[in-house]
Length: 262
Image 1 (spheres, rainbow, N blue to C red):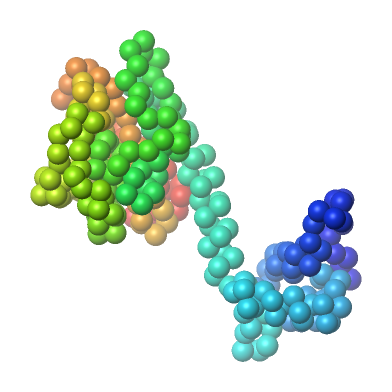
Image 2: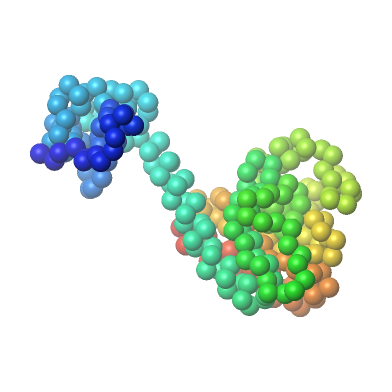
C-alpha cells in the first residue's frame, strides 16, 4: 500500500480533502490509463468510503469518468489543462533559440507574439544592438491584430475567428490616425496568406518596418508569430527577401519542435 503524500504545511492553511483528490489524480501516472476502485485504494492508501466520495466528486467536476467496465479514467479536461501549461513553456523555450539566431544574424529587434482576442500580446523579445531605438513593443504589451508584422500574420491565419472581434473595434486606426477599412484589411490578409508572411511598413511607427510569420502547433493551428523589424531605410528589397526567408524558416523550425508535421 502506498501512503498518501506527506505534507509539511500548517494544517490550518490547507484543505486536506483537496490534497487527497490530487493524490487520486496523480495515481493515474504510469502506463495504465484505467484503474479500478481497488487499485486506486491501494495506490492512494484511502479507505473505500473516502475513495468513493473523492471519485464521485471528481466525476461531477468532470475530471474523471467511469468506463464500461466500471473502472475510472481521466477525462480530456486534464489533458487540455496539461497541454495549455506545457504549450506555453514549450513555445517560449523553443522560440528563444530561433529568436537568438535571427537577432544575431540581422541585428534587428525580434519578437514573439501570441493572439489574445482581437489583440496580439508580446510574450518575448530580443533587442538589437543598434543605438537607434525603434522598439514599440515590450513583454506583456499588445497591439491590435490589424497592426504590425506579427499581429497581421496571425490575423491572416485566424481571419474566420478573430476578424469579427477586430471589426468590433472600428474605426481601425493607426497611431497616426489613418483609418484602415475592412476591405483594405481583408485584401492585406489575403496577400499575406499568398506571400507566406506579413509586411508592416510605418503602420505602427513611422519609419519602421517589420515582417511576421506564424508558428503552428501539432494540429496546424496558428498559435503565435515571430516578427523581425527595424528602420525602413535599412530594409532594401534584397535584405527584406533574406530576412523573410530566414523568418519563415525559423517559424517552421519552432512549429516542428511543437509537433507540427505539415
